[in-house]
Amino acid sequence: MPDTSLPSLAVFYTVWNRGDLFSVSLASLLPRLEGVEAGIWIFDNGSDRETKRVIENVSWDRHSIFKIAFPRNMGIPYALNVFGSAVTQASTFACHNAPDYVAIFDGDMFFKHSLRSLIDILAGDPSVAILSGHDSVEHAASERHVFHIGSQKVIGKTKKAERGCFYLMRTETLLEFLPLPHHTPYDIDWQMTILHERSLAKTGRRLLCIDSSVHLGLFDSTWNTDDVPASHEQVFEIIAVLEDQKLMTKSRYERALAYISKGNLPIELMPAKKSPWRFPWSIHR
Image 1 (tube, rainbow, N blue to C red):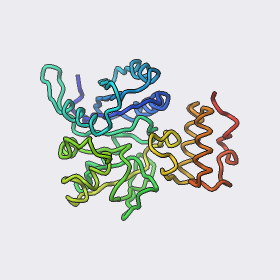
Image 2: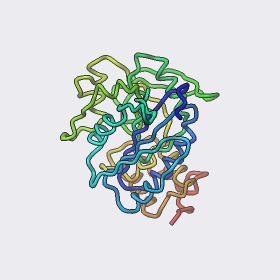
Image 3: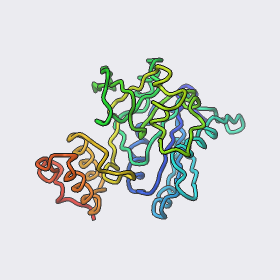
């Protein structure tokens, strides 16, 4: 039976290939759900066979797992429309209620902070409509705020937009955006923050960004990797996690070098010269 004393959260996971990254992402998420009544919705967006097998093997006793498989990549807006319709359907028979909060995750995020702590930060400020657990260098901050997650001091940044790979919001906020258009080149982040008639920009609400995750798929971008900027610290953090989780394959290592050589990092700061990552001598083949 669900614990109604805890905040309820529905997690929206979209996965398209790269099953090794998703497996590590999910493993890093589950311990971060302490203090939350969670349901995890995994949308397989037409993945390859190896990734399908990874998803098929996912199970968890503590939280509910829902799996939806599309025959091909339908895009994130389409999958999110399906999620929003399904997750808000209450069922007395199944003891299922619409969640208090929803989280939108890409399948290649590695989680660093408790989701309950982030929910508490979001709940404590009604002016914040979306909390992003990803803080990229791509979007500038207009304000900075100090928060505490346990004994750790973290910086929250107010921004106009942020990549949509880790969004946390109240369920009613998500419903304001649905159905999202899925026939345009604009993904959910631009719709929610800038373009939609109920976007944060048009309604005067805030987007708060806290560095709570590692984007493991930076070197595997399904868009143009060379156009995705990152700071030195972020790149080295990604490399450290990839190596620690034995995800630094030969091909991923080669893409990392290509990323650095394209100018996203100065060549003198190549990870091969940085300790303690020992990159490239500990490649997992």
